[in-house]
Amino acid sequence: MSSNYDVKDLDLAESGRRRIEWANQEMPVLAQIRERFITERPLEKLRVSACLHITTETANLMRTLQAGGAEAVLCASNPLSTQDDVAASLVMHDEIPVFGIKGEDRETYYRHIGLALDHKPKATMDDGADLVSSIHKERPEQLEELIGGTEETTTGVIRLRAMAKDGKLSYPIIAVNDAMTKHLFDNRYGTGQSTLDGIIRATNVLLAGKTFVVAGYGWCGRGLAMRAKGLGANVIVTEVDPMPALEAVMDGFRVMPMQEAAPLADILCTVTGDVHVVDRSHFEVMKNGAIIANSGHFNVEINIEALEDMAIERRKPREFVDQYILDDGRRINLLAEGRLINLAAAEGHPASVMDLSFANQALSLEYLMQNWKDLDNHVYTIPEKIDREIARLKLESMGIEIDTLTEEQSKYLSSWEEGT
Ligand code: ADE
Image 1 (tube, rainbow, N blue to C red):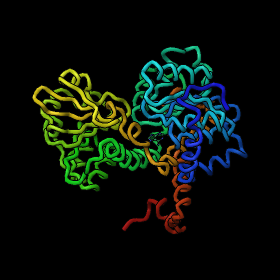
Image 2: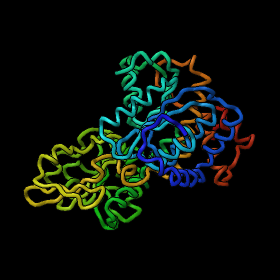
Image 3: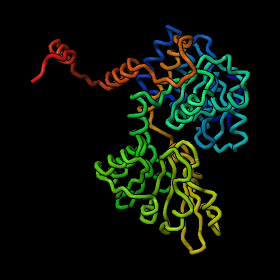
């Protein structure tokens, strides 16, 4: 057992272990990497601080890093996403220091980040760039120890690219999010399913026949709109970028400004990565009983302060529902305090899709170990060769075979002389 931890209750460890094993059955690519890591030990003695959602899937990633020889510690990347039994099991059964308690307040959240950084990492693993930003802002003396880091999310990558552009990034980062085997699958199919899972677990509402507004048509929004439509909802998309807006139209969705969509919404979910996408003027026109949720990384997309300011009363009809009563009698239901609904009220993305994302994490760390001396302080994409290999392994694990180019076809593709 690790002696360094802050988790809710170690007695939960047995349940955590069983659930981690359950998830592992759906993570065959990561399991293969783990087997190789056991013999090759590519991360020998690498001190890693990880700030990720503490879930069964993350537990399997941490076990993989450990199998590769890393000395890894883990803290929560969101105050509401920690699975307390998983945190307990990692401490009890894997001797991995963990700092995270579901429902922790802001102060505890940042204290836990501090404890993870006390590990003096040589590499960081982030989901939202909180470790990178804390080191740069509060512990610059630790920067020179760092050989690199990885970043899981779209939001984090945007933050880090902005830092790099301003010349403020002091060590190289691999943008795991930018791997095709990450964003095309985890963001789309993972967010699509798990967001609906969170909304349904929180409210138990029927989606069929409801008007469902999706704010943002990036990969997460595409997945959410597709799955809501699949359950029979009437989906409206809001966007600020003409390209995805056009794509949403061609995909068969109604597209309109938020001010027009808000009064139509039975359920509204933000997935934009931007601030105050749902604001006071939208609350003013929403239907009585409307449900609003967020599945973007930070809890900034819904202007909760404005809603609080407008409300004359607040009730809690269900665990993840805050009902705000406005002075005209309308009730607006905010889910999970505007935090990512899929991880707060459900269990995040299913293991099968995290298998791809976390295979990228593990291989990115291996890549950093082998190449850090040649990297500048930029945000890098994982090499395409690794990305394709992950796709190949996933297909293989699913028992799916594909064709290979014939010699004639390869030649045709590489020649410029052949035409009609
Ligand atoms: N992000 C989204 N879903 C997740 C999961 N199941 N585990 C870790 N991070 C996640």
